[in-house]
Length: 335
Image (cartoon, one colour):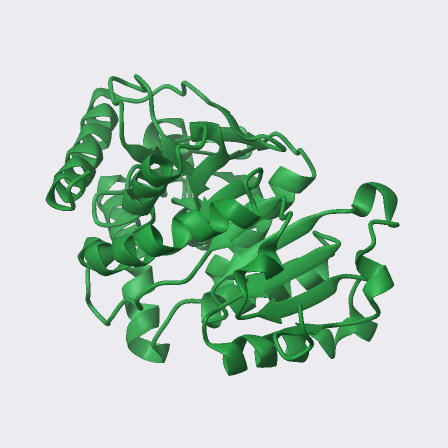
């Protein structure tokens, strides 16, 4: 590949694989706000030995790679490259897809489906040619729909195709609960599941703070801190959090970059971390054939398995509502 097509941080010897068990490569499709934020998070965390960014916008991708590269002195020894040639992704362990049409203020994620499916349809053969063995993580919205579409277009095993799902929504939920309870978000154990969108919902029945069930957590006056009306308000705030950010700054990028980078870390480090990523379900609470977020064990091979966590009857109904919404969208798109 010529110098005019690729920008890299440092001498080529860095990418020779001499770093032993640190030899790893994350490919990122899309040099926009999300892709660049994800690359930055992975770089400063030292998650991979190499980060490669691909985008058809040549000047943009070169500039983003160069900007990241200029911080090499302040971060772990990670090679960052960018190119408008898809071969920059060759040999990637993970390919994160962030490219797609931007969500407009107030626009439901599912309305993005048709435009982004067409982008994915054109892109998939090229990606598989250069990174046939990668685990694929979709961040582009509507991520659940696109996970199902990419799985069908690629023919890859379902465990190697996932999306960021409700990982970010879960972080937003834990933040709000921690604010109400006056504790650290790391002490809150709660999860958003279902569609990453308007039918997502919290698993209140198994949520807890420390070892205390959320529904039994009391405030300083001894009253229950999370009655139904408070829970409903928090769930609505979490569901619409992205819309308020988009209205204020035009896009969400930092937190989703961190969420996507954390998924990459779980994969490359074989963490077996429990995360609500979205992948194709097979008879999970009676749901099959669509990609939804449920508690899943994430490791080097991708989604190792989904955890059969207890759900109330109402939560099972909400999961089926999410599945129906996605089936309707997929049917409209011809899948």
